[in-house]
Length: 372
Image (cartoon, rainbow, N blue to C red):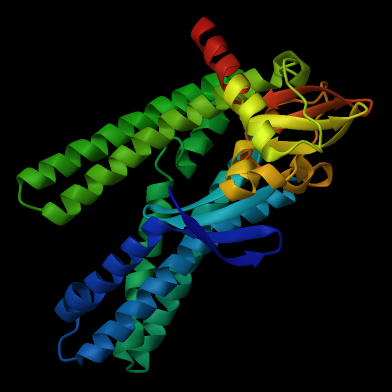
C-alpha cells in the first residue's frame, strides 16, 4: 500500500483509505452503473443506474469496513491495541500491534470478520425481500447485490490459507495441537501460498478462454495473497527475533554529540560532511537537549545556515521517543516505525548512552535470519 488519507476516527482507531482504493471504488461504481444493473434491470434512466451504482459501491465498502471493525473490536476486547483500518484495492486491513496470546483468542479474532459479513449478507437479504414486496426495484437491486457480495466475502475469507481469516483459524488449530506458533504460521502460510497459486492458475486459464476481466482480477488477488502469506510469516519470525534482544544489545555507542550553540554551517562542514551521519544528539553537561537530523538542516534555507544555531533547528527532547537499554527491541522498532524516525536516543538514569538506529536493527535481524 502507498499513500493513505485518514477520513475518520472511531475511538482510538484511525480509519484510512489508501490511494489504490480510489481506483477500485471508481471501477466498481462504473461496472455497476454501466454493466451490471443495466443488464439485470432494463428501462431505468442513466441517472438512476449511476445513483444506485454509487450507493451500492459505498455500502459495499462500508461493509468491508464493518468486517475489519469486527476484527478490531474483538482485538480491543482481548486487550490488543488497534492502530488503524485501511481500505485499499483488495479490501481492507486492520493494523493490530501484536500477535494474539492463545489459539482461542486467534479463532475469536479471525471468525469475527466473516461473521460480520454473513450478518450484513442476511440483513441485505431481508431488505431485498422487503424491496420486492413493496415494489421498489432500485432498493431490491441494491440489496440483492450486497446480499450476494457480502456472502462471497465471508466465504472467501474462510478459505484456509494464511493470512485470510480461514488461514488464521487453521493456524490456531495447529498451534493448539502442537504448541508451536511459528510452525503453525509456517504451515498456514504454505497453504495460503498454495491457494494463491491456484487462484493465479485459474486466472490465467480464464485469460486464455477470453474472460479478461475475471482472469486479471484472479491473477491480481492470487499475487497479493501469495505476497501477504510470505510477508506474514516473515513478520512473525522478525518479531520472535526482536523479542529475544534488548535495546542495549543493538544500540550504537559510537555517536557524536554536538553543542546547541553551534551554527548550522559549522554542523554541516565539521560533522555531517566529515562524519557522514544523519543524526546528532544535542548534549550539554551530559544532558540530552534534543536531536538534530539531516532533514532538519535541509528544512532551513541554505543562506540562513551561517546565522541559525542547532538549538533553533533541533527536535527538542520533549518531542523525542526515549528508550532504555533494557527495553524490548520489538517495542523499539515499532516506535521507530510509528514515528517514522531513523533513530531513538537510549537513556540510562537520565544519561545518553547510545542511539538505536533503524539500520542497526535491520542488519541484526538479517544476520540472525541467515544463521537460522
